[in-house]
Amino acid sequence: MFYYRLLPAIVIALGCATSLVAEELATSHGKPAYEVVAGEMRVVVTKTGGHMTATFPMGKDRPAVAPYYVSPWQGEAGQVEPPLLSVLRGDFFCLPFGGNAEAYNGEQHPPHGETANTEWQLLDRQTSGERSRLVLAVDTKVRKGRVTKELTLAAGEPVVYSTHIIEGFAGPAPLGHHATLRMPEKEGAMLVSTSPFKIGLTNPTQFSNPANKEYQSLAINARFDDLARVPQIFKDAPDADCTKFPTRQGYADLLCVVNEAAAEGKPAWVAAVNTEENYLWFALKDPAVLPSLLFWIENHGRHGAPWNGRNNCLGLEDLCTNFADGLAPSVRENALTKLGVPTVINLTAERLTSIHYIQGCVPTPAGFGKVERVEFGDRRATFVDAGGKRVEVPVRYEFLKSGKF
Image 1 (cartoon, rainbow, N blue to C red):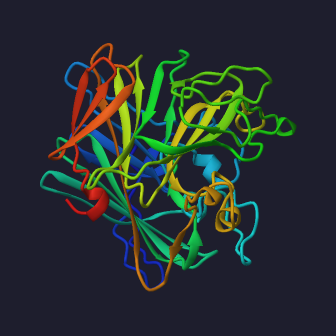
Image 2 (tube, rainbow, N blue to C red):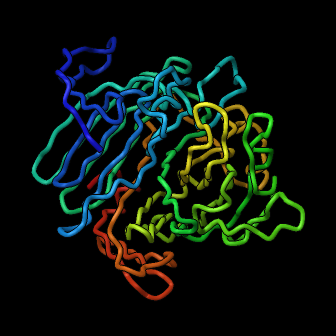
């Protein structure tokens, strides 16, 4: 990735909101963006939509890795709508999560909410000692509120600590992180696993409609208890292995797992091992806040513009939502609430709601395979594969509960 400095903007303020600091922008894949750096680690967030990508150091003898997906139409002529699709990349915070095609109580939100579509403003960017911090904010209009994004990097820790603080926005809302990874071209070269889950379910309705030049391979509304055996839509087809990607070229699918409650003080996790480039991306969460993990599986399965059959990515999205349907379907009874799974968080004007999340990326030794378990110790997480190979990562996972270091 290449980043070019632009001239600082003037200091501005949003109404009675906190005054902004002088705005110094980078350009990331043709889009204005904010960046924060700690050592060799760099995090970049688009001004529009707050979409985050990052590069992680891999050691002295290897180049840094950029694990996140960037949509292939960046820099092409013509306008792409909505803005979310125009900048689509990496991880972004969605409020309310989902398509939001249906209005709710007179509210018509854009896909994945204003947080994923409108411009974020810089509140603070600083490096103090061994810690770097970027603070952005957006004021929502469809449902009045403010969301503040705080991203923190700590020297020697290959992770991004993120907090989204929600003020106002009173009422029920599905929300969460839309982390999206780029895929290798070699089939099955990315190995994905999660902490134990109690429910596995494919999308309850048709996800990809051939009338829209989109195609799916997974069954509709099918239960499963093993990601390696997920029912397909085709008659007599064997179950799909959804631990290895990319696979099933030509299809776009959605499935969900609901994580088990974590042991006291420990997080739930998802891990993706790139066996071609020898690195491991992971995310940690509190499953009491974000109970579901949505797999958005894209393998050249969308042929309308701007996709044009080019997309090869995997969303590993930690959420509280009813799949990707949006606000109204998440509020009412749905396939997950019938199983006792919450699909909205009830926000109030009287208190702030903070969503804490951790993402990281580390090198792996040659031959390291699918993660079988994660051992959590004192500010350490150790990822262990089926053959007993181990990768230890310094990470302050207690941040997920406290939001503090």
